Every structure is written in structure tokens, then in C-alpha cells.
Image (tube, rainbow, N blue to C red):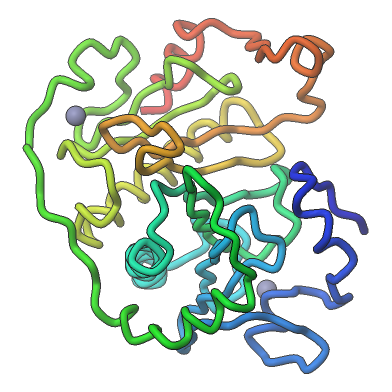
Length: 285
Ligand SMILES: [Zn+2]
Ligand SMILES: [Zn+2]
């Protein structure tokens, strides 16, 4: 077993991973050999700090039950998890004051080093704060009561023009569409009807229905393209330069995926036109 690290700054964390069948189950079961920075847990969910953080304050929300795919979660489990994704994002926002977030899930062979489903919440900063994870953990624990109060951000306009010109719409409520700047063939995105750019502007049931569409889209793409894994994620806020209207990306991953153009020319080679992708995926709807 080895891990591929794409972020050199994470190198200092390599080698700290204990040998257990599932790291997250071991954390849940309080295996004494496994070290973690726990923030919150109940019988359904854990919120822990990432031991390989991409940025200061990086946390993950983990359904307690060992599942490896979103579709294995029952509706009530998915809703509970999404509620905690909303709470935790609000919590980290309040404490760390980042400019934005990357929120994502890696499934299958897509860069996931732990197969137990977990949602990564990565705060993004204009200037990376110089603070150790240990110190942040202390602050998180002192403020853990904030997790109980969901931070809701006021509603914005209901109708907008954002998707009016989209030629590749698969479904209109919520919007499901073939993404126009695909990272890979079969890249689909889901957006709420409401013009919002933060998951805390949606109710948990609205977020749940978006995720059900994510699962549907993922199933459709899986049937057509048979990828080896998926990255599912969204960008929120000024950094990373997110879209004004929330987009949940479903990016299939293939093996082998990179060619020399991607490595040396900073270019994605997508071997299918958008029209072709649209026609294929549309057939699944
Ligand atoms: Zn597990
Ligand atoms: Zn919009």
C-alpha cells in the first residue's frame, strides 16, 4: 500500500497512516492504535480533522456506517450526512474565516486513499493562515457547540438566467447538464433552481434532492462510460473562483487517463465532443 500525494506540502504527513482494514471504521471504533483529531461524533456521523490536510482547518464529515458509495446510504443517512456537511461548512467558515471552500467526495479509483465514504471540506484562503492543526483542533473543540446551530444564509432570487443558454440540459428541475468545460468525457453537473452559491443557502431537503440527482447522474454516466471512479465536488466562494450559481460536479475518472499532452502541455484531452456526450447521456434520462 502506498499513497500518491499530489500536494508536496502534505509530504510531512506521509508515513503516519496505521495499518488497519479501514481507518475510518477504526476511528469510529476508537481503536487505540489509530490517532485522530476528533471534533464531533454521534451514532450516525463523525466530524474529524483530516490527517493529511490540504489547508489549515481541513475537516471531513464521515457517515459512521461503512459504505463506499453515496448510493449505499439510505435517504435518512444521506440527509443526516448532508446536514452535517452544511453545519460543518458553516462552523469552519465562522472559525477560520476562509474566502471559500472546496467540498468533495472521491469514489473508487479517483484519488481516494480510504474507501469508507467521507466528505472533504477544504477551506480556501487568500493568504494561508500560519496556524498548526493542533491549535486549530483546540479552537474547534472549544467552539463545538456552534455545530449545533446551523448557520443559514439568507435566500436569494429564485429565478435567474444562468442556465437559459445551456445547450446540454438533461433535466430542468433541478438543472442537470453536461458540463461545457469538461474535465473528462461524461462530466455532468447539477445545480439548484435557486440562484445560490453556498450550500447553506439551501435547506437540507433541497440539498438532499440535489444529491439524489447527483446519484442519478453518476449512475447514468457509470452505465455509459464505465469509469474506475468519480470525483464529486463543488466550489464555494471567491477562492476557488466558483461560479455564481452553485454547481455540483460529477467527474468520471478513467484508467489510464493522462497522456503526454496533459502532463506537459497543461491541457485536457477530451476524446468526445459535447454533442456526443449529450446524446449518450440524454438517452439515460
Ligand atoms: Zn470503514
Ligand atoms: Zn443563477
